[in-house]
Every structure is written in C-alpha cells, then in structure tokens.
Amino acid sequence: MSDTKTYAPNGSRRGNKSGSRVFSVLSWTVALACLLPMVAVALAAVTGGTETISHLMDTVLLRYSGTTVVLVLLVALGTFSVGVGAAWLVTMTRFAGVKFFEMALILPLAFPAYVLAYAYTFILDHPGIVQTTLRQITGWGPRDYWFPEIRSTAGAALMLVLVLYPYVYLLARAAFLQQSSGAFLAARALGNTSWQAFWRVSLPMARPAIASGVLLAIMETVADFGTVSYFGVQTFATGIYTSWFSMGDRAGAAQLALVLLGFALMLAVIERATRGKARYHQAGKQHTKMPPAELSGSRALFAWALCATPVVLGFLLPVVILVNMGLESEQNLFSRRYIALLQNSVTLATVAALLTVCAAVCIGFYLRLQPGRLASAAAYSARLGYAVPGGVIAVGLMVPFAAFDNTLDAWMRANFEIRTGLLITGSIWLLVAAYMVRFLAAALGAYEGGQSTMHANMDAAARSLGQGPFGMLRRVHLPILTPSLLTALLIVFVDVMKELPATLIMRPFNYDTLAVQAYRLASDERLEGAAVPSLVIMAVGLLPVILICRQVARRG
Image 1 (cartoon, rainbow, N blue to C red):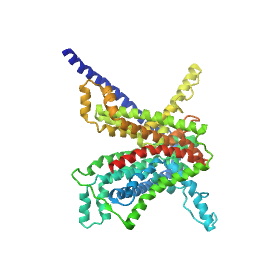
Image 2: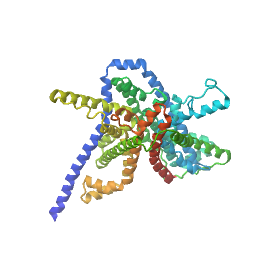
Image 3: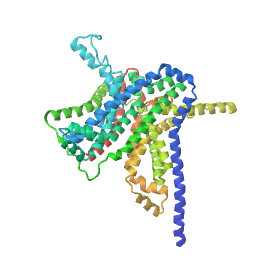
Image 4: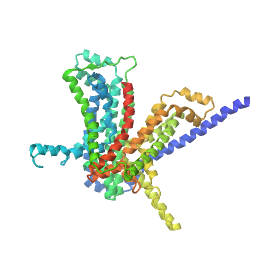
C-alpha cells in the first residue's frame, strides 16, 4: 500500500508535466496562427517595392488617411456623447420608462452598421419616401431644395454611431454604478451644480471605462467595410479591397493593410493600457451608492426624449423599414437559394465558433496552469486579432497560402505532371481560420470571465484526488464553466454571421453567405431584396443582446 501511495503522486506529477506541455504547445500554435497574418502583411508590404507605395502616396493614401481620421473623430465624438449621456440618465436619474431604457439602449448592438445603411438609404435617398413626400408637399423639383446626403462620410459616421454607442453605454453605466456618492455630494456641498459635479467628479472617475468603450468603437470603425463601401466613402478598408480585386495589386493591398494594421495595433495598446488603469478608479465597498435624482415635468420629458432617440433611430425604425422592404421584395426566404445561403452562414458560424472556443479554452487553461510571462505572452498574442480588421487578416492569410499553393502546384506539375491547384487558398478552412483570428479575443474574454470566479483551491483539490490537467479540465472546469462557454459560442457565432470583409475576400467560389448576399443586392441597388438577409442577420444578432440585457437587469 505504501508503494501505491508513492506511485500515484509521482504518476500524477508526470501527467501534470506532460499535460501542461500539451496545453503549452496548443496555446502557442494558436498564438502563432494569430500572429501569422500580421507578419505576412508586414513581409508582403516590405517586399512589394517602393514604387507601389510611392504611387499610393501620390494618389490615394492621403485621401484614405484623411477620410479615415474624419470618420474616426466623428464616431468617437458621437459614441461618447450618446453613450455617456444615456448611461448617466438611466443610472443617476429616475423618470418614466427608465427601466425600459436600461435594456432598450443595448438593442442597436444587434445590427451591423451596413444593415442600417441599407435601411436609411432606402428612405432618405432621392427616390426614397422622405424626399418624395417633401417634393409632393412643397411642389419642389429635384434641384429646388437641399437635403442632407446620406451617402457621405457624415452619413457613414451616423450609422456607425447608432450601432456602436452601446459599447460606451455599457462600460460607462457600469462605472457610474460602482461610484460612491461621497465625492459627488461633496462637490455639490462646495457649491457645484449637478452638471458641474458630473463634469468635474463623476466623469473623470469613469474616464478609463469610457475611454475603453470609445476605443472599442473606434476599432470597429476602422475595421468597417460594408457601410463605407456602400456609401462610397474611401477609407483604408475599402482601399484594401479595391487594390486586391479591382486593380489586382496585391503589393498595394498589403501596404495599405500594413498602415491600417499599425493604426489598429496602436489603438489596441491604448485600449489595453486604459483598461489596466481602470481599477484605480473603482470605489471601495464601504462607500454608499449614489441615490438617483427624481425628474419630473419638462426635465423628465427631455430625459425620456434623449434616451428614446438612439433606440428609435438605432433599432425600432430600422426594423420597421426592413420589414416593409422585405414585404415589397421578391425574395423568398424559404427558396432553395436562401436555404443554401442560410446553411452556408450557419455552417461557417458553427464551425468557427466551436474552433474558436476550443482555442480559447486551451489558452485560458494554459494561463491557469502555468501563470507567467510565457503564458501571458501567448494570451496577449491571441488577443491581438480583435484589433485587426477583417480585410487585413484576409490579406495576411491569402498572401502566404497562395504562395504555398502556387509553389506546390508548380512542383507537382514539374515532377508528376499533376495539377494540385489551390488546395488551401479559397477553402472553407482558411476562412474559418480567419474568423478564429478575428474573434478569439471575444471568446477568450468570456471564458476567462467565468474562470476568474473559480477559486484556486478547486484546482488543488482536483490534483489531490489524482487528476491531471486533462482530467481537471474535463471534470471540474468545463462543467462549471458551461454558461461561459455557451456565451462565448454565441458571441462568436453571431460575429461570424455579421462579418463581411474577410468573407468577401476569402470565401470559396460560389459559396456565399447571408452577409455577402445582402451586400451584393445592396450594391446592385436592390435594397428591398437586401432587406431579407439583413433581417435574418439582425434576428440572429438579437441573441447575445438578450443575454446582455439579462445581465444588465440583474446588475440594475
């Protein structure tokens, strides 16, 4: 019996080491796969020659830069104003309907910005119902009046603000809920008005959380392709696609992607640093929660209108428009064509979600087993993908694998007279890999959020019972973290359903998704037809929004 007691711990120790090595190898394989597109873009850009970048600088680079910067500034200002204002009103005041707005303000997250672009173009463009009604009432001709152009940089910024402000709203509201009343009441006692106390005390205390939300919105803006492409706004995202497909200039596409990659990674570093400082602004548990102010009369009406506007413009009105457009279209959601599109979208989203969550589990569990610089570096490398636009990831994967396929095909023809063609490039699996790189950070965040609630003693107890890393993961971690895993699966599933630029560039021939179909129909000005796949994408996007609403309801 003494031999058995001695053997079990030693065997368990050997199992722990081998299990840890397996998770280390898997984690670093995933991390290197996430780094591959960035390295490939950099190499392709450097080897592309100076004549390409010189031509870009002389022609489009300045225009792309200026438009991208203007769009970023407009979206940053808009999401800050709407998100912070709404968060303050529903958190720190009470008026009729405030409980409804706490959750309703999140609903626009269900929409991709390009879907809103289709809906608003349908009613606001020259032949739309708004301008048509205006001409009928006034008797004006087409050149007798001025009307804001929806297909513009300002129009694209408005669409992005309407769907991205919930990032700022959620983080700002969480920060306001955690603030103590002491500092705010002290400011009021020193003669400050409510507005002055908010501006001088509450807002600075919530600044790191708000900055994180705004930076997330900016990164989504930089990565957006569908909205700016449809509106004809020339940014780096549209420039990459145009250079790759329309001009056939892969070196130019890689160099544009490198510029965009540098900007996105800079934003990621800023966001990470800002989020790291957020903990210094949290209120202690001994502080009392700030009592909300009761609003009545015109103030309550004004607060209600301010909260209702983004909900109406960002969710209710687009739903009504899209439903009407869909009813007027000739698209049949139950036709063989749409069933195939739905199957393609669901298949891609399911496979990508499963693979991405498995990768997140490997990295998160490795970080749990061996916390240290090596594991942290792997996790940080895996997270970088969330800051990289889909078009950049697509270029970064297409360049090396296309070179590999061409080299293999040439070798096989020279030695065996066999054509292998493009084995990897243009395959579903390379597209799924792009999705994993892009959305791994979201899955990893959801998994680590659940893992952080598990006490380290649970791991020690599992080890004392002879469980190695695989047994601990299978019997302890996974059963407890099932809700977090399901959340991660759902988030990645919906993100893949909505993703457009990488899908457009990398999808196999004649393998379209709902997002591609909506984009194609809208590009052909068949907006009524584009409403049908857009509604399906929106309906699927509601699933994680409902989960978020439930969490907000519990927190409130």
